[in-house]
Image 1 (cartoon, one colour):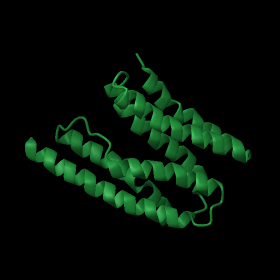
Image 2 (cartoon, helix red, strand yellow):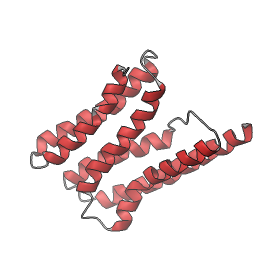
Image 3 (cartoon, one colour):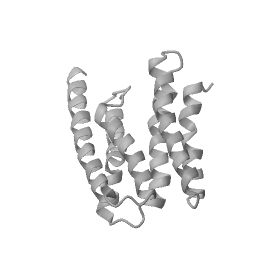
Image 4 (spheres, one colour):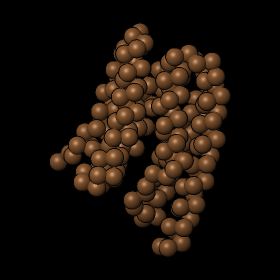
Length: 167
């Protein structure tokens, strides 16, 4: 049975589709982005801070819906950028998928979001909004996502090394 936090997480998928379908309505898209950011905070609050609504499924579905949101909206909004900016933008997500397979291979379960990973997700959401609003320094923001991604990867590798040593 899905809990409230799970439904809040899942709401980001239709929000992404609505954003793509309603790109011609600037202020509605801005509102939908704001709602998406709020749901990203709210599901975590309900699951972790409230300590009443968290589930293993929720721990999986929250980052999954973040990635689906970023992928759906990113494919549409980033198509005008050079390939290396697109790679930088999605590099943390590519790493996450590969790392999840590696962790599974080592029998590690319960990989939790880390600080820099959360910062990348928020930066991706905000950067996509600013790309939509035609912010002139969007390439610079994507480069910052690349730096945050490198820090997130270091943070996860450090965690992984420590966990493998315990196994």
